[in-house]
Structures are given as C-alpha cells and as structure tokens.
Image (cartoon, rainbow, N blue to C red; front, top):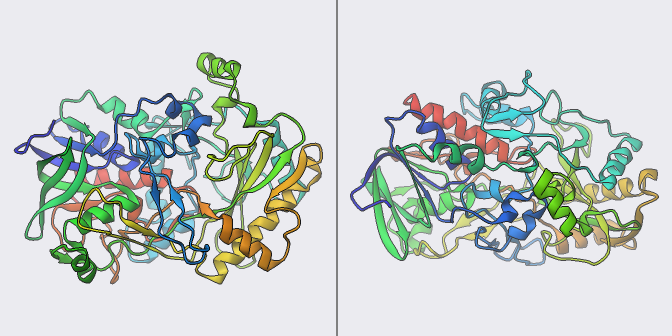
Amino acid sequence: MAGKSKTYDYIVVGAGSAGCVLAARLTEDRRTRVLLLEAGGAGGAKEIRIPAAFSKLFKTTVDWNYATEPEPHLHNRRLYWPRGKVLGGSSAINAMIYIRGNPADYDYWRELGNAGWGFAEVLPYFKKSENQERGASEYHGVGGPVNVADPRYVNPLTLAFLAAAEEIGIARNPDFNGERQDGVALYQVTQKNGARCSAADGLLQPASERSNLTVVTGAHAARVLLEGKRALGVAFLQDATMEKARADGEVILAGGTVNSPQLLMLSGIGAADELKAAGISTVHDLPGVGKNLQDHPMVSVGYLCTQKISLDGAETLGNFLRWLLWKNGPLASNVAEAGLFLRTRVGLEVPDLQLLFGPAYYRGHGLVRRKEHCFGFGPTLITPESRGTISLRSAEPLDAPAIRANYLSTDADLRTMIAGVRLARRLAHAKAFDQFRGEELHPGAALNSEDELSEFLRDELETLYHPVGTCKMGNDALAVVDAQLRVHGIERLRVVDASIMPRVPAGNTNAPVMMIAEKAAEMIREGA
C-alpha cells in the first residue's frame, strides 16, 4: 500500500500493455523503485485464460465499459467501447491477434519529425518483446516476454475462408508481420500453450517478486501532483480514500487513449478554454490533449451456416475439459481466426482494409446470441480519415470522459467500408463456402445499393477496439509529447501508450503499444 509519504523513482499509471512493459523493464535495475498503479483488479477470472471466452469479459468488472457520445454520422448511436480494467489492460480481454501494422506507418511517424520512430528503428523493439514460436528471423525475435504462436485450433469454416480468398485472387501471406502485409492468412496469437498470454502474464507476473516493484490495484488516479510545471507524483483514490505517492524521477502515464488525456486534463494540462469549462484551473495550456482520436471501425457481415460446425456450439463440457487438460480444441480459438489485408483502390501506399473472419455469430461484440450456427466477416477500415476527441465531463476523476469518435465523417471512410461489405459478400459466395453458406443475416441479401449499404453501416458499424492518438507525438500545434514521449512544457512527465501515436497503424494495436513501451523504457533508463 502506498502511503502519503512514500517515494519512488518512477510512478507508472496504468497496468495495461504499456504499463506492464515499463514496470518490468525499469525494475530490471534493482536500484530503481517503481510504483505501478492500476484502477482495476488482479484479474482472476477463468475467462481471461480461455481464448474463445474473451467476449464474456465485456461489461464485467474487468472492463471500463465506456460508451461514446451520440455519433453524428451513425444515426446518433452511442457505441460501446470495451477497455481492459485489470492487470494486463486490454491485452487481458482482447482477441489476442498479433499484428504490427505496416512498415510505412512508422516511417510516416518519422517523417512528421519524430526522430527514431521509423520502421527500421522500431523493429528491434518489436523483436525484443516477442517470443516467436516459429523462431528468430530478420523480422522476429525469440526469448521475449510475449509469446507469439500459431493457432492450436482452426475451424473448418476458417479453412473455407482461406480457400475462398485465394479463389477470388487474394494470395496467401505466410507472415503479416514480415516482408509484406497484403494477403490472407491465419492470424498469429498472443497465446502460450493454448492459453492467453497477456502483458501481465508475460511481463508483470515474472517481475512481481522483485522488491523494487510495488503494484497497487484498485487505485484510480485522480491527478498528477505538480509543482509549477514539474511533476512530483500522483494522487489516487483507493477504497474511497485519497492517497498520494511521490516520484524522485518521473511520472509516466500509461492509461491508454481514453484515460491518459483525461488524467492530463484533470491535472490542469490541456486546452485552457476546455479546462475552464470543466471547472479546472489551467497549469499548462496544451490544446492537443484529447484531440486527434482515431479508431478502426468494423461491421459484421454474417451468414447462417448449414452445418453444425461453428464455434456457436463450442461451450460444452467436453470442449472445456479438452481445453483444461490439453489446451486445444474450440475453446483455444481466438474466434477471429484468420483475416486479410488489401487495398480497395489503386495508388494506395498501404492496405486500407483489414477483413477478419470468425466461424461464429459475432454481432454486438459477441454479446448477442443466436441458437443457429453462423459465420461472419468483419471488414475494417484501417486508414481512417475521421478524427474525434476525448474531453472531460466534469472535474470529478470518477466521471467517465466524453468520447466522440466521429466515425464515417468523411466520404472516403464510408466508401472504403462499403467496399469491405461487398468484398465480404464475394468471399461468402465463393465455391469454397457452397457447402456451408446459408441465409445472409446482415446486412441481408436484399440490400445492395450504395445508399442501402450506407444506411446499414450507419446502423451497425462498431469499434474494432483500436483507439489511438489523443496525446500525439510530434512538434506541431496539437502535439502533446515529443519524440522521447515527454509532455511538452511539463518536466518529469511522460505518456507511454497508444495515445502517443500520431496516426493509427494499419493493423491491430496491441503489439505496437508494447513496442512503444519497450522503446520508452530504454530511453528512460538511458536518461533521454
């Protein structure tokens, strides 16, 4: 328990993917005292370990259970945003897909003036974090804390998806994280021996016995303690009591794209007019805090399956015993077993569409169930133009911030998503699916025009859980941190998580977040 006078070298706020990396790496030097604060609990639920059960964690005690404000381009719907509130953060509740994005993503970060963030420079940190079961290579590392494995279970419907993609001219790609990104393949997953390998499993648990690491759960950060424009520590709520901890070195925010900008604003760091409106005195006018929000939107294109082979029948005692004893079978599935990356139009530098496939009914984040067996496609826009914001509702730290994702605010975003729906239908009607394909459930075969598909998207589009960018790295007017991830204008304060990304990578974001934290830990230890 952190007392009011307790002092550390570093205080890390948030024990998600980034926070676990930071805590583990910084305490490798046994002289360095680190306090890791996590608002959630330790995470003992069996569903965390069972890969196929991840959607059962949504809207539970391990989930922040956020929702957006009414989305103006989605018929004013409020979209549910699950975010991990547990040791390991969202790596404890996600679909375990290991994707780095496209090398051009990181070269773009560098081109914006962020020295050291090009792909050739960040690749060593991807490799450092990884234990690639296929072995070491130019693009992969072994011996790292996060286990990356080929799936132990592949559903017959997923094999049909791979065949369907090749049938319509999409080539197999042996490694989405290798020389090229385009193509179709089974996903690799952050699993070890058929069970989830979260950042807490791979990094925090092995480091937890170190005497120089203190982990406090149930600790909701309320504000950064500041003396002028210098961070001194953190005030946090635990058991309805306000506690304080001080840092001789730095305070490092690793709360993620929602919570890190919220904490900065609660501490008086943000756009002065917005802080005043929330009743907060401005310490440092930094207008980019909470701006530049980006996310990958996804929609489910679903079909009935004419054979009883999908994951919809996976929850049996036999399958549970099979997973418990041998860590294989349907419960070892990450549900989104395979996918593809492609460019929906000529002239694009990187793929703009990711399409996931799942041998199950997946609508409403897996919280909506059907009795029938189903399968579905998840076309996802991975190069969105739309930008949103995170802002305060009030000065109360326990009040969730206002999330405005602003999905489909540009015609280009809408067009790419329509192309994704049409691609999903082409795949579903390939010969490979003839023996499995039943009725199209959504959008429904009768909806075909641009206007009809646009309305379907506005009715059904959801998040693919990859929000980034609200404390972006750079040196322009809306930048929040510099290339060393130090907050502009505030001493001894950094942000290390997905919020620092200037632009969302063209792929899943968990692996990039761990890379960012690996690089940040090295910079911090070297005094950069």
